[in-house]
Amino acid sequence: MKALSMKALRQIVVSLILLAAGLYVWITYVPASQPFLAKLGVFELLGITPSEAAQAAPDQRGGAGGAVPVVTARVGEQARADLITAIGDGRARRSVTVRSNAVGTITDLAIASGQYVEAGTIIASLQDEAEKIALEKSQIEFENARTEAARIAQLQTSGAVTEVRLRESELALRSAELAVRQAEFDLSQRQITAPIAGWVGIIDLEEGDRVNAQDVLVTITDRSDILIDFRVPERVIGLIDVGQQIEVTPLGQPDAILSGEISVVDSVVDRASRTLLAQGRVPNDADLLRAGMAFSVNLSFPGETLLSIAPLAVQWSSDGPFVWAVRDGKVAQVNVAIAQRTSDAVLVRSDDLRADDVVVTEGVQSLRTGSEVSPQSDEAAAMRSTTTTAGDTL
Image 1 (cartoon, rainbow, N blue to C red):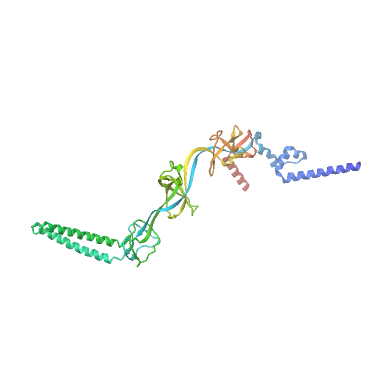
Image 2 (spheres, rainbow, N blue to C red):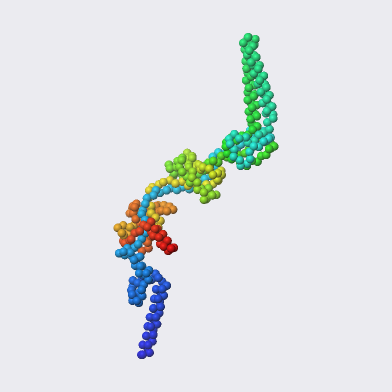
């Protein structure tokens, strides 16, 4: 009997030692358990002074009067944006393909590939000796016709010539004048000039090449503005208008975001795609864009005004999204319907939520319907976080 009692005593001692060791490990390596143990009075029973974290934990959790500390933000209002993204093809403001008006050999090529030219600049000259001879001959004939017409007119006053002869001299003078004009025109066609100001494309010609009428000499492009053709759905016909601002991004330069405007809106909806053709204009002052590039075009159409809340305020349950609204120091669960998400807010509809209401954004883990809370705005929380970080750094 005595042996049995000693055995039981040893087991109790061992159990107490193991219990003490386990409690020591729990207190030392699981700091989160200290508030719970302090609440049960374990520290007081063992004569241990709890850490500052364990003593402060009840205040942090419940605050004054058991209120839960939370971070809040006010509900705002924001117009819902109907965003449309389309892919469009860019083309130059003006582009002209210059062709030869005559047959001949190039004697002078006055421009180079990639050069900027003004309107009227001579691009190339063709051999023109025959045209110069023809012009000089027509000028001589004109002088003879004018002299003869003057002599006949003088004789006609004295009655020495008939009215018919006077008429013939006048017709000869007029024909000689037209011959001079024709010769001047033929000579002018031996020089090809730029019809517009712009940038010259790649030239595949050399001096000495022979060209025929309508042969392509060069392409001149005015790319001071880039025009972008794109299509929009027919539902925005009543919203899109000339002068509306657009945001354009070249697909080959995703980091370049450019601003432009609608320049033309077509008058007919395509029956196959039910879309409307529109044209945007983007200034190309930096000369970074080229005709033929592909662009992503973004348009925004303002819609109905909805409630705007912080993204962190939206919670989810089996019934859908909801927010914790703070009313008279307590929280109430308010169901919402998400209409649109933006980069910094969530637009929602709700029958029980109004603009300027206060909703919880942080500290929602411990909330229940009717829980008392100690609200703190996002601005104050951010300031406190900044101050704490600075103190830790110092």
